Amino acid sequence: MQEKAGEKEAEQVLKMASWVRSLQWISRLTRISILFFWGRFGLPIPFRVPLLYAVGAPIRVPRLANNEITQEQIDVIHEKFLEAMAQLHAKYKGTAGLAAQNHLKIL
Image (cartoon, rainbow, N blue to C red):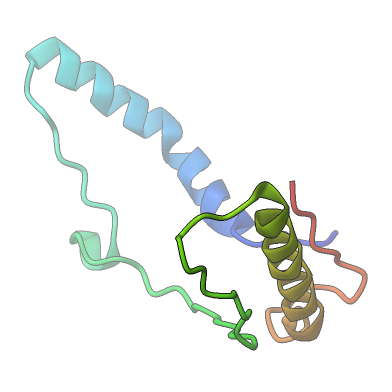
């Protein structure tokens, strides 16, 4: 089964959900906020998570003299952006550990 980005982290949060609900109930009952540190060594230090960045070529946007832009111009620039995102995803999905048949879906 293919794993999606962030799936492991979401699973950890869901496992803790019942515990968190118990703390919420106690907090409401006592009217005191209970702090729950969830990080390395039980401290508010985030867990180490590998971050992968992909930087593509800049998208050239023409400078407008009167700062007015039409919807057609916005649509053209937006389409260029979406194409660039799809190209970056196709180029670096292997580096990110995604399967070759994985495709980017932009909603």
